[in-house]
Amino acid sequence: MKRLLLFVGLILCFGAVSAQKGQKKADNETNEWRYEVEVVGTGVQGTYQIKVWTYSGNQQTAINQAQKNAVHAIIFKGFPARGGVQGQKALARDPMLEQEQEAFFKEFFKDGGTFQKYVFLANNGIIAPGDMIAMSKKEYKVGVVVSVNVAGLRKNLEEAGIIKSLSNGF
Image: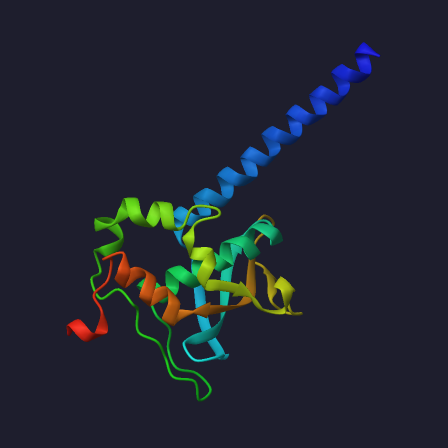
């Protein structure tokens, strides 16, 4: 019985260490912000559907990271027009905003952070055929379609004093 308990304890410890390594890898990928984005369409007013191409060694990590990447793109990069859908300029006009507001964005983009209020997986996170491309033996480029509530995101950032309101001028 003692051996069985010891065995179960070792398995649980190994699982916890493995999960921590996976989380650390996801955190590192967040810090690198490696992604590409393209517009897919528009949704209800103030919402865009975009495909985020995320680089990762794990499909589930890529799906989770794609949501952060999508919101990051809307705030800091924007996206070009495509197929009759207008492009979107970055919400942040100041190229140094991410560094200047580092504490805010660290909290905003943490797992379970506020960013999740403004992004939703389209197709329940199902990866379309051809949207998982092997880049090397250990890394994939994964395309995930998400919807981003740009209007709600803008309002949140304005209320937090992170970006200026459109009514304040440029």
